[in-house]
Length: 190
Image 1: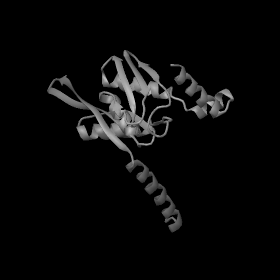
Image 2: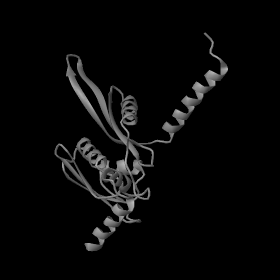
Image 3: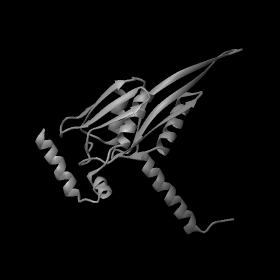
């Protein structure tokens, strides 16, 4: 029944590493919604939490959690967000590589890369996404639905369409310098 000491240490080491990675994550609560259900004895209240989680280095995720108490709903939302994290390629670790649009339901968002020093120009839930992701310069516009769930899902749709010059060059069978020089030519023509 007793495991050898080395095996226990390895297991503990793996768990400590995972805990350390999770402690580096930035959590942002976007919204809490109180829902009541009318029953024979009165009303039953429950809470739904919408949470954004990111590591500040290009990984971000969102999750929802429902429970009878607020802290439990937030914990469930955070766990859900950690499971659904995606990696987004960033230019110089501070902005997006290119402009992109995203849709979800009636939500429509436009994300634009920005020069250094611009800051995060985004409203509400989109600001939380970019701050937890570690983006420092970006300009965003939300058209259509102002519902936080739709805005977040539309933003993640847009982020899923982001591509780095390296991945585009590999897909097309070109060199990265060909892709980047074309970007410079396109900016020069405007």
